[in-house]
Length: 112
Length: 112
Image 1 (tube, chains in turn yellow, red):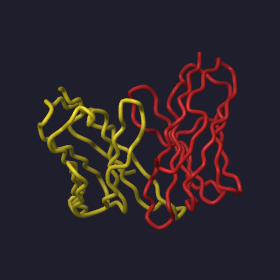
Image 2 (cartoon, each protein chain N blue to C red):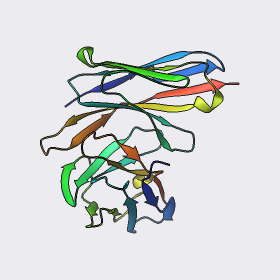
Image 3 (tube, each protein chain N blue to C red):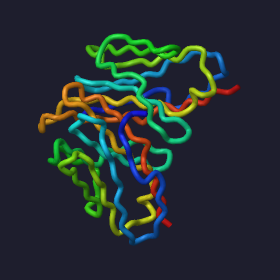
Image 4 (cartoon, one colour):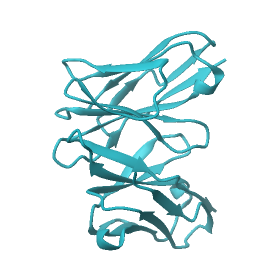
């Protein structure tokens, strides 16, 4: 099956710093999403980005499907950015519906 | 608010007991996914339904079962509970054509 690796596993930043999180996957995929799990456990959709580049405020993401990786950029980080960032890749399964594999996440802590 | 509703938000029970977790997907979404997240772990896929039919199975224990009803809500039944079943249980739904996942807020189960 598809393998998903995220790096780095842990990251500590000072408020205001920028960071890049990476997601590598081992096979062709149809979908890719980035999620933020906040300290209260909620999973928040950041980007649905099978390919190309998207931006939303201080966050942006790029997926290069042909090279099997995606990057999540966080600029001017804030303490509220703390939490775990998950990458999930999806492909169409034999049943005709989407099947997702999650990476193990990058745990981010932003210090005030 | 993702539009996916999960109840209950918190549940405390004893070993050997049985519980039912409920999920209402976003309006129009036919697919429902269940995930388990143990403490400080990633998301483990349990099972997926599409329009009432089981479509994919992941690492779901035999003590666990699920179903999706005609109104598209889904229930995850956990029986003969063990301490190790304590976890966050997430439900997600997705629209048919994009497959983008939208998660509920999760049900936090504590087995004492």
